[in-house]
Image 1 (cartoon, rainbow, N blue to C red):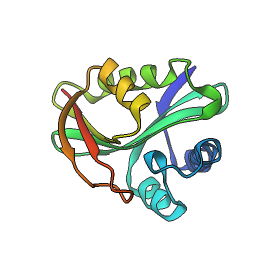
Image 2: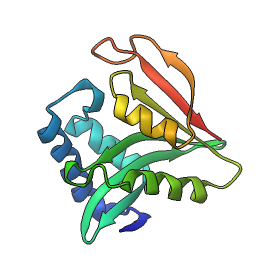
Image 3: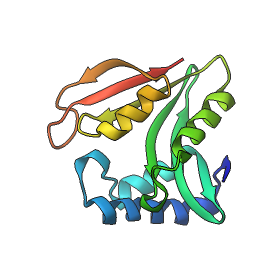
Image 4: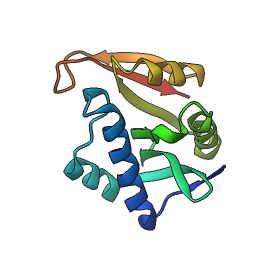
Length: 145
């Protein structure tokens, strides 16, 4: 396992990973990134990735704001789930962000497995946005100092 900052050359692997999630789960609202929205996010966000050999096992996209890293996308390849990779990737991010930044993210209310991971890592729910998603579901906002 290797963790590193992702570069432009990693974008095809990131797109392929998102497509693998869509193929595995269908286009569920808990994780739906259409190609145009994903392309825009990949063009403007920074990313960390975790690799198993040459394969991208998971990644996190984020924006570097003055007081926080705002996480916009967390994706784990279906082949590499339940191996602790995302937990290690988040631990790496926490160490890399330094003491002066928080981590912020939001998650679909039906994505219970992601909520459990974030809470295990020490994230705290700070707010809810009712009817935030296109399917009418609530977004749960988390923060980690």
